[in-house]
Image (cartoon, rainbow, N blue to C red; front, top):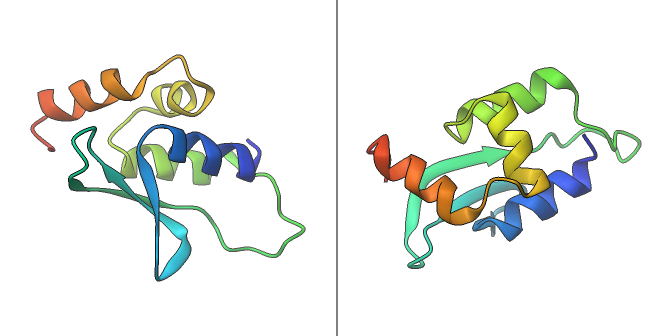
Length: 93
């Protein structure tokens, strides 16, 4: 997956870049509350514009999703509302 697409997809679904580290994202609920859900994209060098399968799988786990659900979150089939419902059902938030 393209690194920029992943970062933009996260931001569209309620993740906010952490002020101290621009590769670190924290999920804020639709009510604007900070949650314990967070993930991080790889720093890497600027030539690494694609995130490999192992990193995508790790980010999915950090977001409490399967790899397919994470892909759906980034590519939009999984809405922020549905994602938040999953987190609530799992009692994560």
